[in-house]
Length: 438
Image (cartoon, rainbow, N blue to C red; front, side, top):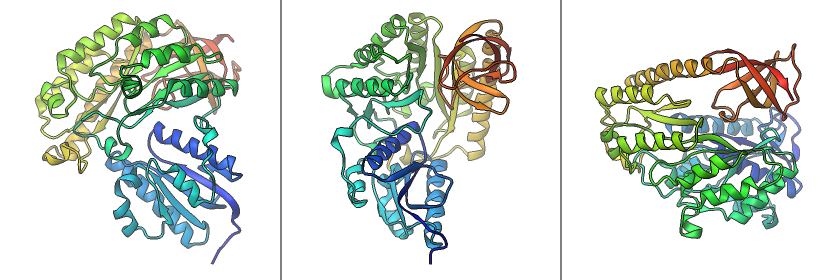
């Protein structure tokens, strides 16, 4: 029995996981809007007739969050707060048969490539003319910009190919058209994402074409920043460094998950590289693009990781002085190559090692930030929180990197605008400053 009136044709899309999932939700929202649905993203009002949960299945914590969210909405359905619950995304792609048995209250399950079928279930048409368009859930001035889907890499620990399939590049002309439409609607920053951005073009053009794509996107009027995420170190296309150096609107920033540095670990992880090749690549990137900020992510507690492997990673992190760094503890995933190995590092040791890495990185970040005091930086402002306007330099991506805070009682800036900020004070992961020019 329903306890409240639900708004017919109102759909609440709930997104879990990474920026690639958020992009997919934005595409879904755009299609729903075009079909005259009242589509909202993560509404706090429990008045939607339909809830669609876009799940993540990457690691244990993410999977549990997805399960918990599904259960929350199936309970809401039982209480009359929701009429239909649909589940899509990576968890659904990977575990659909098991989930159907365990949670029968869900009305239908869809995988990562089932958008047309999902829309058909909702009695909506898949609008082909909307390919490349979506309804942004981010502030209008920046947008995640997916350039390919899937992955062909054989990394032993990763289940992404099981959930997202083989690598498929989006044609350049389609991406340029999408960028032009975003720019026309006020987007100033494109955050390029993919499972492996440096593989772009191999399937369509028979060569790595990321540098050509960057040039074409750089030519789009109104795009002030282009930021590159998820570059793979093996087979790295050096041509992108020239483009990054030559084009002012391509940020001196690269997100390149390196995962480990021990040769034993890199070999077992099937990363296709070595410690020395990794060190040489990082040095080459810094030589080719002076001042570039390198962000990386690492894994602690991979099967067989010894204390020596861990100490080697710590020394390398200290020597490399990465501008930005994040750490995952290893998650044992079935149907991956690493899933056949013994998960022999205790969870508490995985966590201790991750914390040790971040302790080193915190000191590095504090030193690097202290060096910025007194300097001026171009800052893009994302939001206002409490007494501060909060923005980012070209060396920082939203949500995961450092931020610049400006006291709103002393300076005023418009959200979505750039301003030059003089840095007056630094903390481990934040900078504080005053506006110089707007």
